[in-house]
Length: 120
Image (cartoon, rainbow, N blue to C red; front, side, top):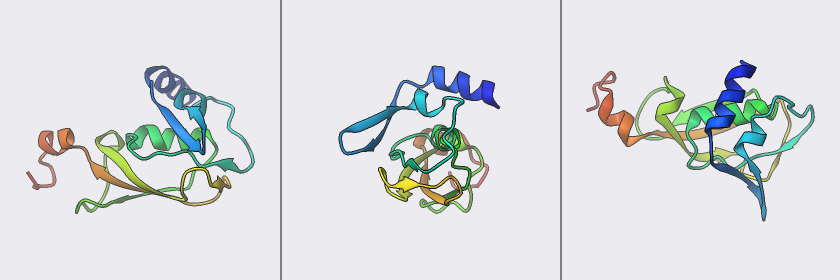
């Protein structure tokens, strides 16, 4: 799994905003050295769900719940979804065992490409 994180980190160019005036590059968030204590919650709004979950796990946050807000019942492929809301908010300190809820919507590209859920 760590090799996947390294590969993903080298492919991603964006950054995650942490709070007022500070930011953490997504690549740094995907580093193998996850903190063991509370960490600032990164801003994941607009980030592909797969990258957001990987960044949270790299920070030591494993309890991630995804909630579709566009009428779908569940999330199958994290790369077909984009984060639209998050709780807790960006910049808030999060304990490693704390639940993080990511509200997501399916990307237009994924929506038009797949008809598995008969909504096209």
